[in-house]
Length: 165
Image: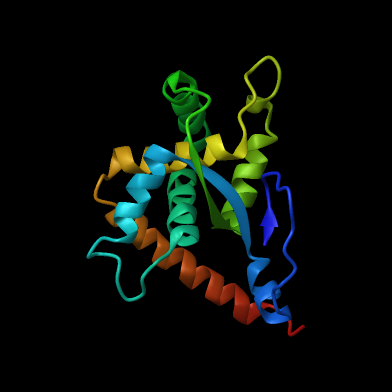
């Protein structure tokens, strides 16, 4: 697994098959309020066949926000009006997301909207904004679960098209 947050130690106890599978996910952090909402969605009766885990749910939120033509604007609006008012010491939970959605957030993090003279937001804040926006739009999370299914199908399709390694 690649990490986008600093770590103090590395563990090299994974097998090569686990390692190749893990290259598809990126570590991030999620603010507690949004983590708790996703945890409730993870445990909900609607999350079945298959049961999606945090990388799927977080990635679905990112995908849903970026489906809108004004997704980046909505993210920065949330960051600048709501998240900025929370304590910077707010606890965060370490979670993961799939690489394609991480790439979307990385591009946003490197965009002019996140450069001087604008404030600089980090990956955990961008990720949290996506989850918060999805929670605001659909508190039950049905859209997130539908998007998790679409993302899974896209990953599976890309896996079939990939050359044998």
